[in-house]
Length: 303
Image (spheres, rainbow, N blue to C red):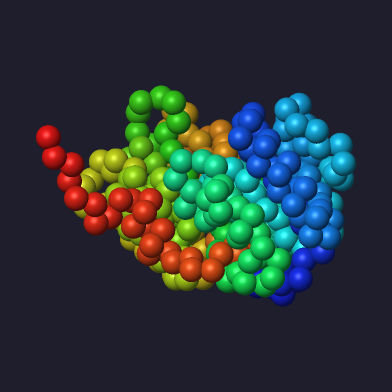
């Protein structure tokens, strides 16, 4: 498995990836590109980011390219936006082993550590090597139909098999390493990484897993049997979900890519050989982030 590597300590080429359709993102991206240029850094702007943001600010000075070129040439990528923007960039860059830094312009920002107001100060720390590297696991997924693979994808947060738009429950069979575990009738099942444990899994009653743990959470969505509870399994297992009965079943990857399923289809999941390398600024604490984002220790508001 790949790991965080050392080129980020003296980066010469940095790619910028931003959320689309946001004036604040446009200004931050332009400001950051100019600042990096002044520090002697070669700057790439991700192509779709440039196409949208370039309508609001002038980015003609910078090289624009796709994720493949970013993966081949960038020492690291800075993602400006929220967790959704980071999820997309992470999946696109995972096989290239490009470290990621997140500047939060979204609402929660579990994966984007740096506040917009602290952006340039933290970039100084980054360029001077004062960042901490942390690996996060990914899930590999393949969808099988009649013994043939019809789709494959990766997920940093979670893979969800659910009932789709129709109100009736889905029934599927869960197996782990070839052993039948149970038939589940529910609205679906979330298969979550530790990174994804603070996302959809958390809102569905799943446990929070520290990102350094090597486990996978299986979280049923509104199970018909109340004894079907979330469980955590080893990250080396092979998980298979076979759709037994459903009217409109679907599989979702990080809530961004969706595929329609049919009864009899199988979704096979395992830990990916790739990992995502996040770079955290000085003073970063996972638990401090949880306290802030989840409002732990706040006093109840009075009347």
